Length: 365
Image 1 (cartoon, rainbow, N blue to C red):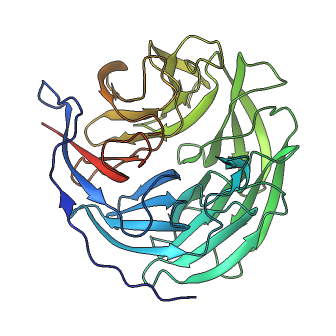
Image 2: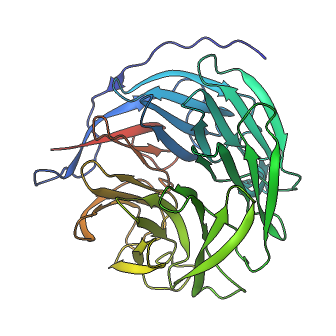
Image 3: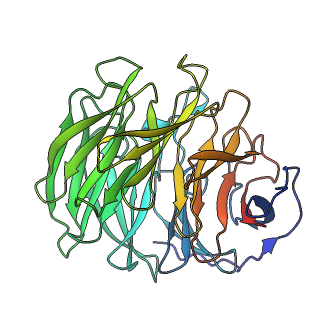
């Protein structure tokens, strides 16, 4: 692999034309983080490792996972070797582009990410060198991912394959494929997975069942056996983003609200104990990625498909009420949050964005 040398870039504090918070505890923009190399124009999921204080962004424009220091809001390096933004008919072909989902494993020692060629790329987090490439056996991209730290199991979805499937892989030496879970009823892909310590299961967003947009679900997957345990219904939501809240609460970003779906905008709070929807936040939707800061009791959802325009939605996790709607750019669909300094990171593309391709950093008053 080529060795690339990058300068450490500090966060710019130049203000962008975004609304500031009015009340204490609400978010306001506190800066931006510049990204070296090609201008950020195509990207996917982002992730904060709360223990190592590193922020990871799937940067398709640079065919890499970009790594940033949370405390200093600065670029520290990148893991390269992905297919990047694959073009088809003049547009990015999401079904074959990468990187996509990203997490760390084994105490933050490794970076695991899905790629557009249906593989999982594994990197040493310190050197950012590629240490393994694992095929999921599909034809489309390996997309969003999750990690079970107790059993040391990684999960990735292949939403563009038919039928849709999930691959479970051990992160222990050898990286054995534990098994695959085929979701025959999933008729519009599969989205964000998360591990729930309460029952030791993976929960995975299933946007649509049986070609009915009003019927979605959370698929419950056993990481030890790689078996589908059950499908928990989440109707009129089109589940996309998924973040684990306090206790058994789960925050779901809903695709509902996106004009192409024809469903009223909403976000959902799900109770893992009862297996039912606990609350609905109406009026905002069109989500991709969601995040949570359980230290201060906030949920976040990046709503690039919101009917009133792209926003970052901030939810009070204690009351399940909408706190804030912060205007973003058209493709701002990724969000991650740090519990160390309570910063929230929202990548914004060069095209249609306010900063020529950067990460906008928000913090509470």
